[in-house]
Length: 431
Image (cartoon, rainbow, N blue to C red; front, side, top):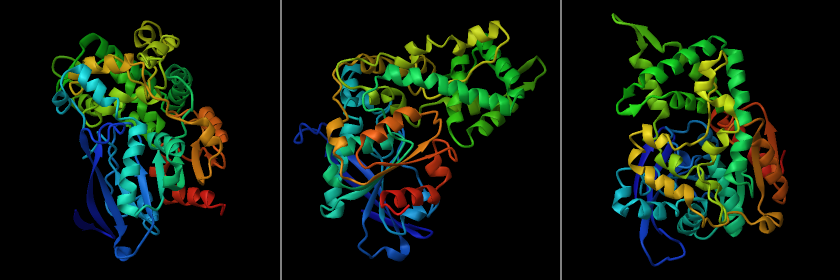
């Protein structure tokens, strides 16, 4: 272990060895990393543990500086483990560079089938006694981290003292088709709200999409397409995302000696925002996190989009309607345009066709739950359907909700200490 300091906090790098396949504990092992954080003034005290599960899938735990955001509130009473879920961050990262070590696409897909919430929870249950001496701990799950927390309640509630969920109550039984059929209308509402706020962006977006359709430029090997441009709508699910999108669009074009062109600034910003180089598992496993049973996900977002023709950029450009942005959807073309994903196209196809996903949630066990649970549910959350979240909240015995339109999906980041305070008061019945 290596310990070091930032302002107000002592950090310790912790590494754990866990089975790749928990049904074969004596088989291949992988390394999982977590960063312990404790307030500098309490570093020598025995404190209860809180494990943070990041959203995604595919993102390592946030790299805080000092006691910023919600971490400062948590450090008043906890030691915090900022866990890089398997395959992310420093936890045996899975990407175009490392996955060929597994073999070909079939071997890669079989390997990645062990990187969903069921395996993440079993990792936590191996790590927990090594840190707590066997005592249960508190879980804070953001977005996909909340999906993991609900799996935790289904599979190993004995390891939990209390559970805090922010924007991450999944449907217990929806197929990926159902998820995206509910998502596209939410995305359309967010786009309409953006254009109402920034009406000048309607023509800007049309001009950009038309230019991309005609010229198909590349930036650092990333093919910039109208569909890729539309995917920037993922920003609209965050508190400041509409403003970020507006600022990105406003300097899209520059005059050159030959013609008006897309600026280097815009092309680089679009490439950076659209690239999965830092989180390829998000693209590879995003639909797989909904897989349960024998029904394949089979590129659900792409198929369901056909039911919403207003999202087709070519159709919009032929008429005079707005180009609609998309949101948290993954499509086959992502694996054609992004150099970080291109070598993994066949692997993604095999995952999309997979028909042997284990069931993730135990409805009977959740109905009998005895672990205190509190969840922030964001009104009209673009990423996680509010109606699904409330149905799941009602299905988990004793779960208390805070339904709010004060924050978007990233409320635990934007609201920081206040959000965590509210959930802790709810879970402890102090509200």
